Image 1 (cartoon, rainbow, N blue to C red):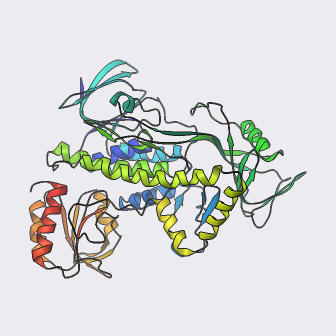
Image 2: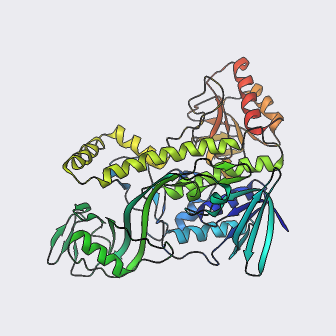
Image 3: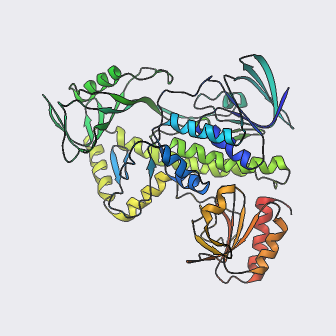
Length: 509
């Protein structure tokens, strides 16, 4: 019998991120992955949204950027057959990093190795049981069957999660009859990329940049006259069931292009080929006693570019709460906040991805009018920024206990430049250790004295900020603000509120 603090089933981006976060919190996870090797079948093509800021707060973003060999595209993102175009904004609300999933998993795998994570590939979970004290997992490994016992089990094992099924957690939703094919290819000399990104195809004429809708589906192209690589995209309704582990071929891509466009579009070398279907499912609950879900095991969204962002943020939210329970100082109900907060975030993502379905799948005159009106609205900065924050996941504000909450409470902590006696630092640098932070921005010894009772669990820092949003801020390990004091807030109101927040999130001192 092998013992661990937490068993993680699945070594995709969510599982690997969770393992690393648990190790930062001093917890021993065991990662069990059914596949003997990292998958090479292309899936997601990059990272986007709030997870990029979180990686920066962990000191990892530059490492990921250095590994990216593709040029970072202009901030222009598809949304249900139209586009969110942030290219005219000096500070776009949504960013992306083109990082193929197999490379992302390699980087996260290396990070897990540096943190001494016990990762076992080729080990399949075949049975799960739990009682009031532990979870027991039956595993089939290369050397035969064995058992693992742990305080908690987290299913990060994808859309067909065995963990979710064995826990009896419902996964209601809708599967759409769409097959999506995405490719990055070179084009032969016979196809000309025009200055505006349109394609001039011999025997057919001009195919405009962006999306082209036909009676047979949707075609998308993103090209630049300064690059030999173009991105091609098709959507068509099909009843064929595809195995996710079976790679797409160039022939399959060309057949789809022919069906949708009604013309042969010649392609050269394929740099990336991927195929996926769209599903809208969300687990009824993310926790059943000692079994929890994260990533695709908890939610599937009917649009591209959001799944990895949501899954890795699930992991960051969950890790420190599991660690608090395992270390014995978690306040009552802390672990339940994982479901409350991340189910809320998943519902927000489901909202805009289902809206994309409505925009994308309509083929009549009314649907065309809807897309045209929607695109007109996005010409104005305010709705464009609002939609960008929704897609990026930066508009999430977790509900915090108590009344008269500061505007920062529940939001992702802003990256303030901080001036201390030791020099200049930032909120992002303080969060690299993944520990709670109490930040005194107004030299409030009354509040520091209270926070001092939790100094074994909470880092205490005093600094000045160029633009002070609050007198003091309490930041959770997932970089969300648990509490903040308003400017010049009297001690008789700030002190009890701070004590309540510290106790509520970090237990009895």
